[in-house]
Image (cartoon, rainbow, N blue to C red):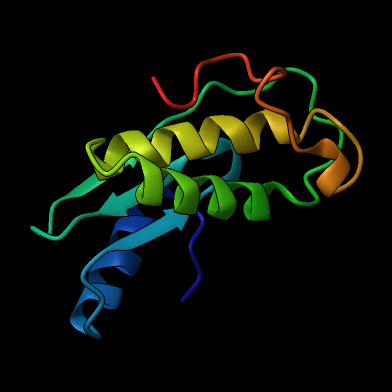
Length: 115
């Protein structure tokens, strides 16, 4: 399934739910992400676009790593908020070259990840 728009991402989430996924998240690069929660509602998570994109290598990995960390340590946050924070980390990641070297440290983040 080709996914290039928010509406197509919502349809992809719907298809994944039909196949048995309880939660579906489609990342959309500079468009943010689309989330389908356990109740089956679909929501677009917009992000602040970085004005200085240098290298997108590793952005997906930083998103997944941040999301996993938040799901494990901040269960009280809604799925949408967890995805929004993971998108923010990924969008900051693209401002530096490389993969792991582009991942911001907690001191470099422009927001408080755990607050």
